[in-house]
Length: 254
Length: 232
Figure (spheres, rainbow over the protein chains, first blue to last red):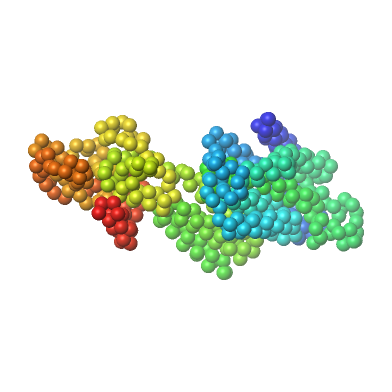
């Protein structure tokens, strides 16, 4: 089932790539060289110029970067699934023992929990403010995924994974992978280029942007940067967690 | 300009990475390398790249590498039961000098050991093993192993020869003496020899680190302690 969905996602990406490729001559990226600095200020509105470039003018790169990560996670999970799990049956579901059946020191448990919460907070912060400062979805997702791993030395890893499944993270992962190409197609048909950002100020015609809280430097700025960062963040989080979870499950805790 | 300091440190770390033989240390150095490049990027005015370098290079990949190395390090050990050197305990598990040495080595290198009883006569079976141990001495009969595999000298011993031309080493001789309480033959002293660990010919790095480990334990006195505890 999940395999079929993965294949569907990959096919969608390929079809999308073909569509965009066939439309390349309509694409402003190849026909002219826009002045990014001016465009940034007048139409995109992100404070983080790098973020504006990779989420708007060069989103094509970002999309396939995310796709590469998706394929990598898919591959790791497929290979490691065949290996026998190293779960110790003796102390299963006992939070005083880790996956290898080793007793967990209470100091490590406390430190692990604290580091986990700090890392999640940091990840959420850099995902949400990716268009205002350094950071963004990709880094935030990796930080969040690695932060969950810290828990795996001190807690029942299957419980963590089940919790994430209940939150619907794997479903989100697939939905996002399908949504991003569709988002790109909206740009192709509704605006001037594939994967173009929705330039909110231009679209809404709002003059006093400060009033609406969508101007430069506000949380909602840079068009759809917030949505894209969140989508990429969840996607990368799911991918990095899938990789780490399968490594830990089949090869043992550090 | 300050970024040059970080690049310099990154260069130092990468060179030390080339010369480390311990996998865990090289992984940690790799994480350090990620941190150094991250600092350099930050000072060069690229905080986005710096974040990515820190999260991926120093965090994520380090974890993945450490987890994968943990169980890759499994060595298959073939042993010949020898009193005082490696012997089965009644309660299960092993005892003996060579066993203590190799298990301490494995602990330090984060290796798992897989023991299997062998005889040197079944040569083809031994091809898939990484290490042979258990009072192995070179009496000139098993040249296949002693000439092609990596030899690591473990302990000094003596070889003895009886009237029938059978060669026996000091440990087995001592054991025989303790059990039987008498000499069945006259033994001639053939002189000084060594017990060896034999390591599969392609795994020179394992042989080198084992040699280095033995030298180190001789220096810090642990070797002496194992000898005293097991051989008296």
